[in-house]
Image 1 (cartoon, helix red, strand yellow):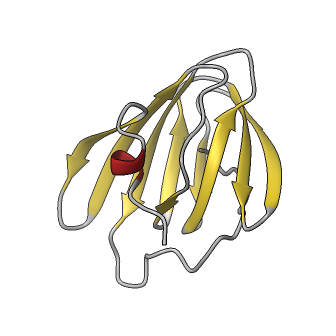
Image 2 (cartoon, rainbow, N blue to C red):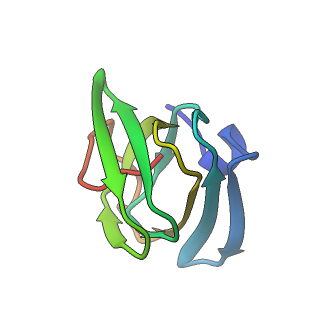
Amino acid sequence: MTGDPAETNPELYRVVLENERVRILEYRDRPGDRTAPHRHPDTVMVTLTAFSRRISAGGREVRVDLTAGEARWVAAQEHSGENVGATPTHAFFIELKEPGGEPPGTALGPGLPA
């Protein structure tokens, strides 16, 4: 199983708040940056900048183009990503710590970020 994004990519992910119910990660990258395979529990993603990413999971790839100011539900999953756009990425991930919130596998869901 792949790891915690704050450990697999500490240069890109930063924990800004954590308690017994939620963890908030700040994510920043530049065009061409890639993430190592990692996992997220059920998460709300909030985009601060517009960006384009290629998300890879379970042998599948999908391109995701997001605008600034979006809030999206992202189901628990394992994946890796690459900034394939011309702009830096800046987003927050609000990870839920509810029972059953661990990723079930390598599903690609709508609005997947890194």
